[in-house]
Image 1 (cartoon, rainbow, N blue to C red):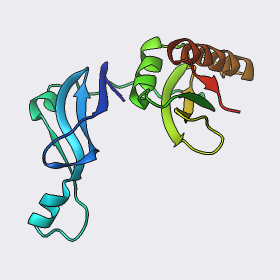
Image 2 (cartoon, rainbow, N blue to C red):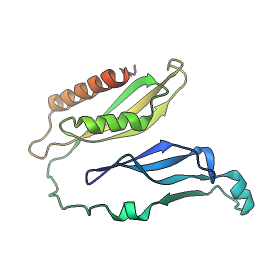
Image 3 (spheres, rainbow, N blue to C red):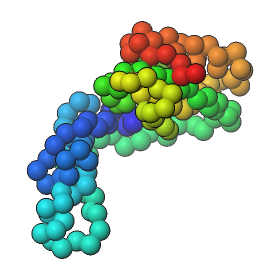
Image 4 (cartoon, rainbow, N blue to C red):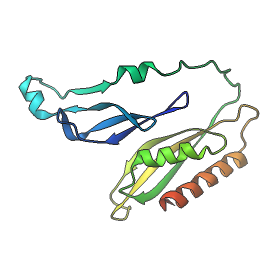
Length: 169
């Protein structure tokens, strides 16, 4: 997620008040600014909470110090969405992949988001499949299939070079 040049991300981390394996540290430009996760079962029992409780904590000064969004004219041209499914090593974090794509600044790529993560039948051991939605936009002209194909080829090459990722069959 981008916020006026600042990148918010999440990393797997343990916190004593949060459920192990169901918590994350919140980062803004690589700096820890908070936590997110499910309340640890011992605290859920201690406070006699009938259902799972999720919570977050943010450093207010980090959140308040951000710039306000600036007005941008809305383009009359529609964005193009393409999906790509890749297979890569299971130890590579999704956020690492998304961050590398954002940092590459591939022309015309407006946003990339994960919509499916799969491991199991049809995927080799020690591998996982990521399905990514790629949103492309050009504010000057309507994107053609050829334009979108070039973007997707560049994205596929980036993923192959950085993560030894292959297209999922």
